[in-house]
Amino acid sequence: MRKGASGWSSELEIYLWGDVMRAVLRLTLVRMALCAIGVTLTTANAVGACTLYASPAGSPTNSGTSPSSPIPLLTAAHRSRAGDVVCLMAGQYYVATPLEIDNSGTASNWIVYTSYNGAAAEILPASGHLPLVLLPANVRYVEINGLQFDGQNSSGTAVFCMGCDHLRVIGNTISYMGAAGIATYPDSSTGKAPDYITADHNLIYHCGYNQGFSSAISYDQHGWYDSFAGFHSFVTNNIISGMYDNSPQNTDGNGIISDNQIGDVTPPE
Image 1 (cartoon, rainbow, N blue to C red):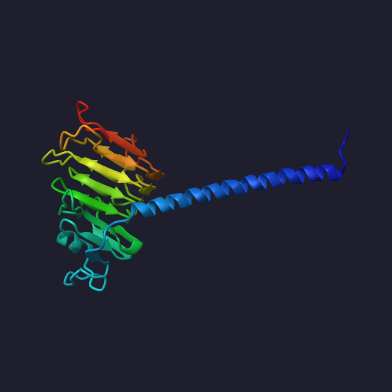
Image 2 (image 1 turned 90 degrees about the vertical axis):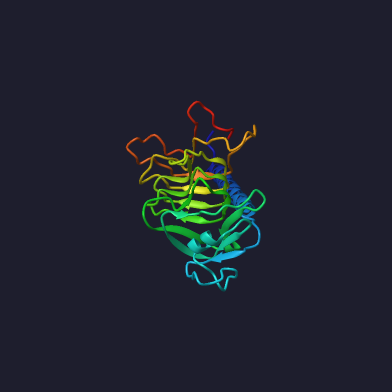
């Protein structure tokens, strides 16, 4: 028996209403997830009180100890000492690659680089194709927290650890790097291997479209800083998308990769 027009109309209205409700539910869940991510990132960005203030308009002759007397980022990196919290004020920091962090913290007093009051502090390349930030083999106990990195498809890596140890890269936004977002590798001159590296709650996207031959987070040939049998390094709670390997090898472009030492002696990760 055929239904009347009104019967079909009622069923169609119910069907369409069900689709609308399902769409609304999906949208609500997505919004809840994004809010949860935002809350988590905000929590991850919590650090101590500022001791040094950097600004794109800072002067090397300023004290750097207050927002009204900021210093350039490079000057802050040179002046920083164990326990310092270097706060980057809002703005774009163009650096001649690489910006080398050459001072260390201690186990109880890390040196932290973070944004001032959660402001958008963005590091970009002024020249060169090397990493935006480089930590050499003699540097340890440094945290990079809540900053933005834009490689402009030129700079190879946002944060590069060449044999450093005890490095935390937390809550940063990294994009348009030529090869990798966060990368570690043994020091080429001394052979010292990186260890105790943490990459947590970072947003990394659209990297590898220039130099390539790497991945969003690349841990390469970590060594033993000490004999602790538990986990040494961590990759947790990161969000990664749009990776590619533009190199002739075309073997990488992954989200996360960890390459072992020869003979598989890499500490637990």
